[in-house]
Image (cartoon, rainbow, N blue to C red; front, side):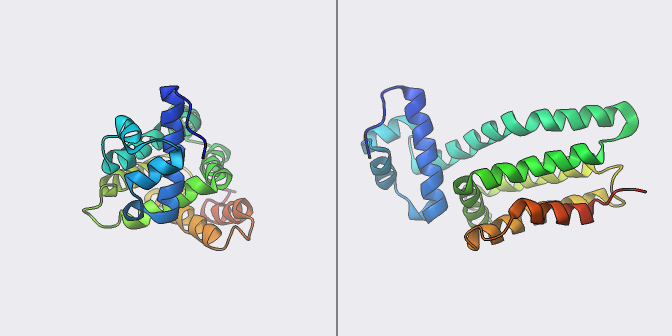
Length: 199
């Protein structure tokens, strides 16, 4: 692989992208600083200049993912929250759009999806470095979905958990099956059953 450009922000972003690929392929225990440095075209010392340890690489990737996803999802969440604060509750269409946007991001970046699936599985162990990150993120997602579903579902929190499980489960099946079915169409039909139109 060609050596990375000298621009520190470009180099840092390239390290993130390479780390996402490697972690999704091999898991946290399967990678080393040396292998990641080789993949990035830098020396071990060059990589450790940006991330002082293997642990810092994973934590940095998780923080960067949180920032990138916030740039995309936060405007939709804000729109739904504004609608709910007007007293009408979030509309079904707005909630479905928000939920679908999360899955569209997953479908557009299978490498990112694979990283999340692998890390979620590894982080089930309470002592795993990413356990708290995934646990907290899952709790925030369930809280968010439950709030948005307050006027759309008879049991908002239960439906929120079902949606999170659907998001994780469909993503895993899609990746494991080499993306051999229409992920978004399958999602749309399942969500329509979970959040039916009110008559």
